[in-house]
Image (cartoon, rainbow, N blue to C red; front, top):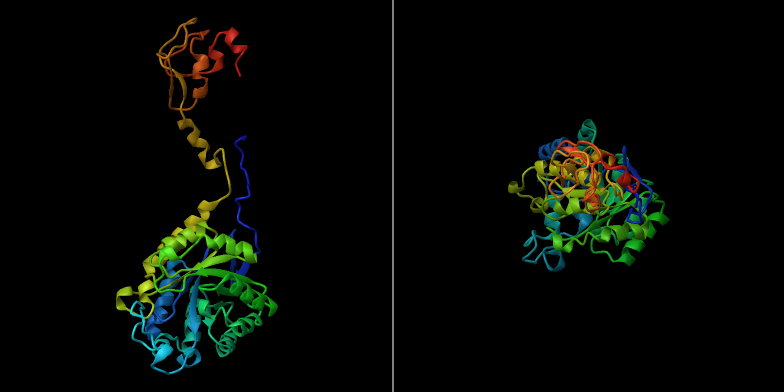
Length: 372
């Protein structure tokens, strides 16, 4: 241990970064923050544009949409499995068709939203839920695609997206390792060369206890891809922790005002919280660094505040060092305190004023001959 920087096996697995728009996504780059609009426009294009403006001001790099219609998602039925009867659900008492109709982003808004993002320098892409959505998004020349957790088992959809040659972000909520492997194999087999996997807990809102963020390093190692977190917990704590565990992407739902309601409002961030997420995840990433012992360049000036040995009383030649005239104090310009017992009882060869940092050169020659 010579105090130099040590690079150990604790370093994260090295995987090739993925390029999304102007951003490189990987362990050596700041986390990519994706703001998910979802249905938080509440049916208003004006509110959707205001959300884009707020996301741009927050410092997030990506605004993401969802591209579907109620008819491409489900059937217009009001009973059985098409009706949400779970009293704990945010959407209790709603049919799937009604819910998707309310939450969908009209397709003729996409270009308007995309143009507003372009004006702000935001990357804009979407989650398609069927092949018609992929065809539509291709007509808009989106730079990437996101596959939702519930669609990870839709291998034909994954192959259709992969065939575009665009980067793909794949959420893994609920999926077993075998199901993730099937999805990854389908994507790669159909031409996807840039893939990111997101850890996700597909409950709304999600509990931190159900997040299991320690899966992130294993997920990256298992598939040799950058990983991230699609986060449905409330607040930003889980997202910051995920970055510390190697997340290169954080996706969070955003809303202008939670109190105004909306299908996803309960687990969405408001603009000020999104800005805080951007700052704190960047701080977490910067703090990771490498495995280092012995101090850094920024700590060099702080060495003076270590304790060291000082003469605390005026001494004449021939005086011996005792606990009364030799102490370990700050600052750190004298000999290290580890020599205290060696120095006690030794004699000085010259006058020494109180407040002098202890050095070997102050001692008699016979002591100097055995000094380090």
